[in-house]
Amino acid sequence: MERTDAFVGQRVYFGRPNGEKTSGEVVKVNRAKLKIKQLESRGQYSNHPEGTVWTVPPSLCTPEDNGRPSHVTKSP
Image 1 (tube, one colour):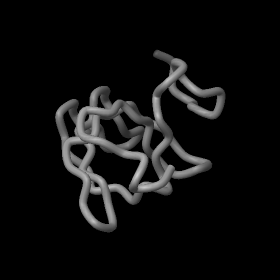
Image 2 (cartoon, rainbow, N blue to C red):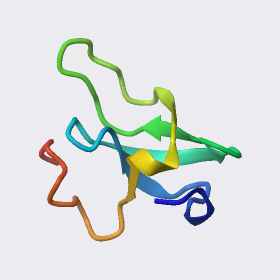
Image 3 (tube, rainbow, N blue to C red):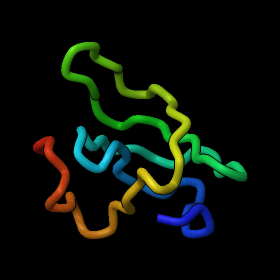
Image 4 (cartoon, rainbow, N blue to C red):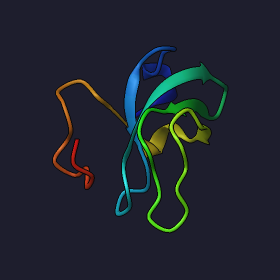
């Protein structure tokens, strides 16, 4: 995903390519990174609650257009 494709209010999945993917909503679009509010619990060893805001590069985000992508590991 490119930074120019992102907009405030867009729902995305974020996380490393081979790691856990989490649903979130874009809160702010900065020059280099996106601020994303987490919409589901995240973390296997340390649990991060819903509502946590993450600073994420756009390259680690996938738009949530057609439901959960096949590469997302968590169930809905």
